[in-house]
Length: 468
Image (cartoon, rainbow, N blue to C red):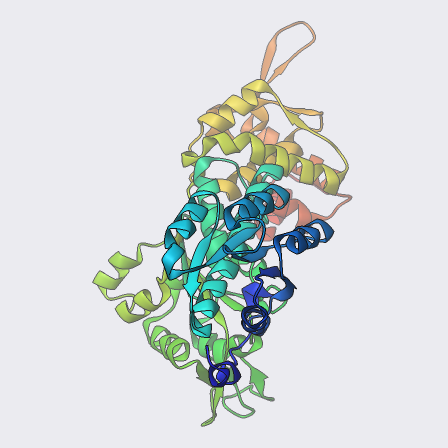
C-alpha cells in the first residue's frame, strides 16, 4: 500500500457502518493507520490496540461490533486472542489479518468463529470491500433479531394482526421490502388488509418520516384521475382556478400507494408508466416537467396476468410494478388467527364504546367454521354488528349474522322454558333502535357499525316507523 494510494482513497461513508465500533489490533503502526483511515472513511467509530492485552481492555470498557485482528501478535497467539475476544464479546465479528504463508491459520480462525480474513499485503480497496460486507452483515443481523423479537412480543407486524406461519413469512418479506426502494406489488382478495401491508413497508423503512399517499384507483373519477395524479396549472380546464400539485409530487421522498391498480384506465396506465420510468411528471396544461423521487407500491385483488392477456392492463407496467411480489393470504387460509383478530377487534371496540365483550364457545366455533369471503374486513364488521345486537357481556352464536350461524330468526327462551322465535325483521328493527340509542342518536356512526349505508338506514327507520 503506497502513500499515493492512501491519499487517493476517499470513498463515501457506508450508512450501515455508522455507529458501529471497530477495534484494530496490530503491532505495526503503519498497518493500524491505514486500516483506521479506511474504516473511518466508511463511518466506523474506530479504536486501535497494539497488543492483545490492550484490545481486551478496550473490549471490557465499551461495546465493540467489529475486531480487525492480526494473527501474528507478540505474546499471545492470534487464535488464543480470537478465543478470548469471542468470550468477552460473542456478538462481535472478528476479521483476521494474516500473511500468505499462514493462510491455514486464517482458515482455522474462521472455524473458531472469525467472520472472514484478509491476507497481507492487501490493498485499501480490498479492505474497504471486506468492511462494507461486515457492516451490511451486522445491519441485517440486527434487523432480523429485531424482527424476531417483534413477532414474538406482538400480535403481528405494525398494524397487521396475525401469528399464523403464513403471516410470519409475510412479515419477513415486508421487513426485507422495507429496506429497498423497488416497486412492490401486493396481491390479495378484498378485505385482506393490503393497504396495511403497504403502510407497514413504508413505516418500517428509512423513509418513514416522508409522506405516504394512498390512491384508490377504483374510486377516482376517470376524467379527474390525470389531474389528481399529476396536478394541473391554473386555467388548464374549466374550474382550474389555481395551480394544484399532484399526488405524485406531494409524496416527494416518500411513497405513493396505488390501491386496486387494476382499475386504472389503460390510457392512464401509459402515463403512470412514463412517470415511473422517467421519474418526472407534467402537470395538466403545462409544458414543463418536474422531477419526482417517490417509491411506488401497488395492490390489486385482480389477476393482472389475465388482465394483461385480455388487454386491460399494460404488460410493461405490470413488469415495472412486479419487481417485488407479496401475497396477503385470505382469512380462510389462516383460521388460527381468527381468535386473535376477534380479541383484537373486541378490545378496540371496548375502548371506543366503553363496554367489554367476549365470545361464547359456540360463537367462536361458528367464526372458525365460516369461510369469510370478505376476509378480515368482514370479520370486523360481523363483530361490530354482533355488539350492536347484544348489549350483554357475552356474544352468543345467534347474535352473529345469519350467513354465519345459518338461522332464520333469533330464539328467545321465556321464563317457562318455552322458546320463542323472533323474525329477522323484528331483530333488525330492535338492533337499529338499540344501536342508535347506545350512540346517543348518532345515525352516521350507527350506519357504519351496522354495515349499511346512510340512505339504507333512513329507509329502515321510515319502514319500521322508528323515531330514533
